[in-house]
Image (tube, rainbow, N blue to C red; front, side, top):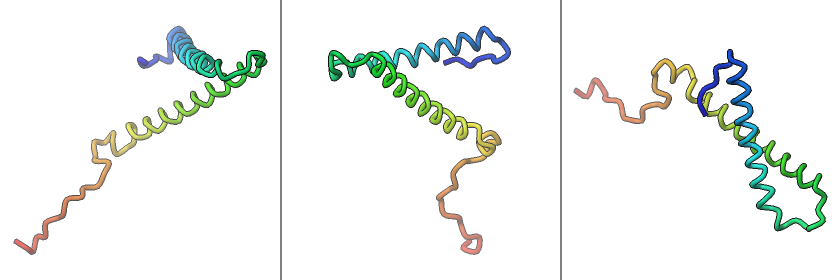
Length: 97
């Protein structure tokens, strides 16, 4: 998804609508996938609750994942242009020359 200008309420609400649509689409897919395993007389409320519980957990996992990515790409060492891993190449001994 494209960046959102948080100073523009229209962009924020449109972004939230897109996020909600994605979550609902996922919930519908889950409901469709489990429909064949549910008894025909399963209470609709339980199905809805289960779908939303699952979708909420999925969204939470996605948020955690994105937050971890943001920590990596916005770490001070990365922003400063310094390497994030130590070099494993052996150092040359100056006295060996």
